[in-house]
Length: 466
Picture (tube, one colour):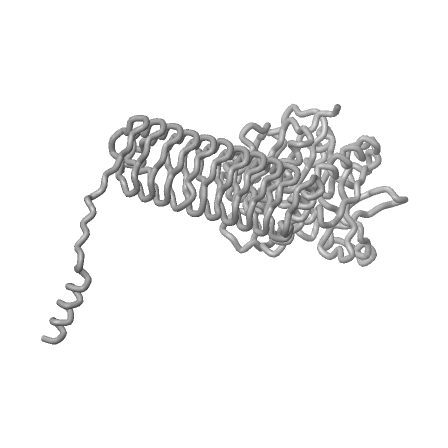
């Protein structure tokens, strides 16, 4: 198999985005635009991937490294914006010694499919030349470089501003995506001159140079797939296409999505069969959902694992949480990072957890905060319970054994332990360990003053009369 490297052009400022942020960093379904072409290159098995950065280079590089920490990335810098050929040429040192093909992609083209790139590589094999390209047919090709053919074979690309009237009538357009032999690429780039209306170094000149050496392979792709992002209107349009593509794939795999127009599921999310996804649900950043799960309206899951048969009721938020089989969460629950639930756990409305490990069958159904806590199996935690885990300097652990009962409106001041089968009466502030099977109660004695209300009213009447 021919060795493959990839160059992904991420250097542009994106003036039409009207933003201080580099264009390729604008998010589409939770990831920067540039993440998608980079991932496609990695999926194809590229042994070296070179993002060419320029505008806000440090920020772009940092973002890419955070997304692909273990990928074979080699960054290159385009110091000045002098055209696409100059941008690719900037990657030459990063690919020094690479023998094989170089895939050239754009950081602002997020909808390109892996299958299209595989077809491009196959077309390169079939043609046997030094270059293959992706083209697309547009009803209105204004602004795009035209693919000029002679005898049915690709001979060159002419940019729109350089076209004759006859060439402007051509509807086959260049998508700017190429597979090129490295041995040809670097020599050809050195020969490209800025003799065009823009005064830039056009990468499209490679096509004519390659056609002189042999056949140029070409793959036709849908215009939607090859469309770039130039402003925030186009950003939203690309997001809608990607959203539809992802949601349809899940539905065909056996997932029920009640309203695909409002369900936001990032690329790469795993969802089991017979799971139901409600309206306005967001599944983000590596979330894994099992089979027969119900995710209610407005819920947001980020980097979380949800096991089979769990019911997440509406407007619950899970972040870096692990949820066991057959749990019931919400509505309006918040599971923060470090939450681990065993099977059959119930967390109800307005319950918040953080770094909480909760055992099988335990329940906290109302208005509770459980932070930095290890909770055993079969516990019942009443409404208004709070683990007081922070003393202003350090976080401390609360530990509950199996079968513990915590009465409503209790405070557990960590570090503290309640042993197996322990009871804490309602309204108690627990500051000392509770032995197994013990009851802890700390309340002010109740005082009842009979006739107090009538006496008060009499006093008030007397004051008004006087």
